[in-house]
Image (cartoon, rainbow, N blue to C red; front, side, top):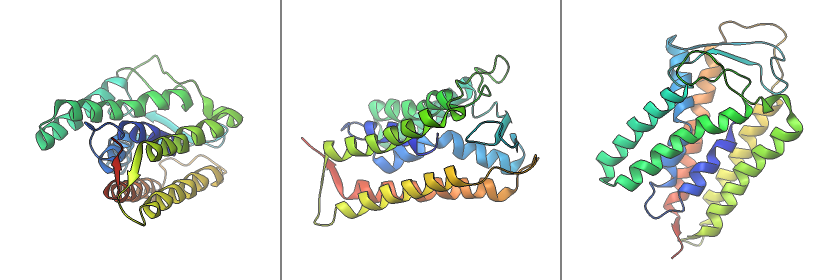
Length: 222
């Protein structure tokens, strides 16, 4: 998934004890932020293989530090510790850490078997990327259902509070459309160009900044 991951951030952000939405957007994609950074540094590896799944050509064959369950729990613990040092709130730290781990759980639905428990076999993944008729509506329900839930549970604090929400929703839709409509490669690309990781990192940063803007204009309803 891509924007479907943000459902966890939207739901968590409706708790008065949770970090703000921008922080939770970072938490939601922290594992992929780390993965694309490690890809650029040569710590983890992938290649592009045409039609390795119906929707995604990424052969994610080496990502033990980010996409193992143990690795995800480690990133969650580190993120939760940072939140605790910042907010001095155990509840905020636990919520932030749980949102980090949600990325691995949601990935389990769509990935081919390339996730692991601790970096070694057995590989795990239900492979919904091979079933677009299921994955596409599921992604949209997760993403925009989460956004709708957040909007219903919060209220705007200014006359134009609708603007950041609309901007976030529009950019999410465009980013997912680009992800879905990008053509599969015609041959194996190993390693992939650095631009792939850079574009992924840039998308996550832009969406997190928009989520921060949203959080500045909305408050949780009593």
